[in-house]
Length: 156
Length: 384
Image 1 (cartoon, chains in turn yellow, orange):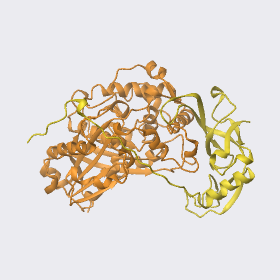
Image 2 (cartoon, chains in turn orange, green; image 1 turned 120 degrees about the vertical axis):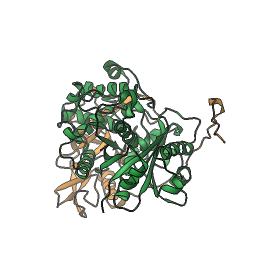
Image 3 (spheres, one colour; image 1 turned 180 degrees about the horizontal axis):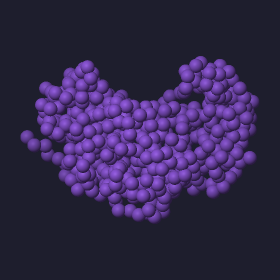
Image 4 (cartoon, helix red, strand yellow; image 1 turned 180 degrees about the vertical axis):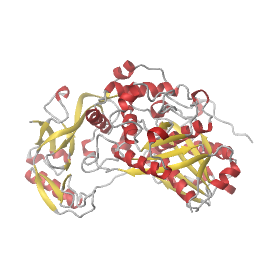
């Protein structure tokens, strides 16, 4: 018997579905320490791999280059430079943003890695790669232990 | 024992923006039916093992790979399923046949992207849940940031990137299976809406639906079953650091290392001279340039210049994405890489019709897994 195909779009009826998935994420050893310091003391922390001489931000307990276990913590200056950036005009739902957001990867002197965050107090056409910026934190009472405890990075 | 491995059958459904009349399982069935007919095999009798390459949530369901075997003829047979690009599946089949574990194997991948109502969220939920996801930006910001750094490090211009979109969409006009062929100008691209500066709308591939199945066989079976086998000369794959913070933002290191592996397996010393044409990932226009450099198909920092001088056009020395690429065909989720392989096979068989390249013996297919991944694979194919 031959297969009869649907020839009218009106005859196709998709079924709508959704997946309600809820989860919690464990910060882990490195994440706990990073976000406690950020929340309580407003400090950025990194961790050093003595084998590779790399300082990881965000911190982690293993080196992705040599697989050593990492335990040597140190404070990272809250000033860095824009390694790269984009001006995002689109929100998560695909709509155009009224106020585009400037997203950047900020790298810190001597640090392998950096932080992805938005830039504030600067016009998009004034941003350039290599531009020095510094971290702006939310006030201590508003910090909860999240990457959003950092409000944005602003030009120095 | 090292055995030669050939692709002896290809089957696919046309790549379309929407496919309202077929479920994804029926699409896979159609592609498989065509591939088995093309190879002259019965899957129940002749195919020893199967591999499929798909991601769960793109289908709006979880653990969906348990539903793979029936529609490609694999029930009660050996099947494994990869959450990876299709070229990884091709590499698996290559290894299993090369080492003598199986003789004939099928590789499947498909996209039913049109069924996904919230695609941005799929990518957003793949981001690091602690450091990146709470920012709640549209995850394509990664592409804008990567393009910006690539331009900065190499001196490539926005115009050179835009030319990739012009070329690939024009190439797609000669590919009857491509969804997004178009005759557009450089200004059309540059004037299209700015999405993630410096990335504009026409430099971003749009999604498409489609299923692809290939049948691979050892040399003995290939000669018995096929009069036009296309040989898998080499495969390679690599993952760079997954984190946004430590990855290389200028270079596609994953493609460079995957390419190096594939060249080594294939015994290719000078890719620029030995590769006749290439289908490389062009999910975003700049990606094609970044990948050409990583694959040593041009000198570092010169891919933009090469495109500008017409060095990757259909009638040039190194035609790139003559199928139309993802910009012209449409992006096919995890089947994106297999579409690249498919075009190389069609060209090496001499079955590409009005877009057929003259006198081609060796072609390269390369995939990038797409946002926010930092990994990819390479296959090198030959008709002799």
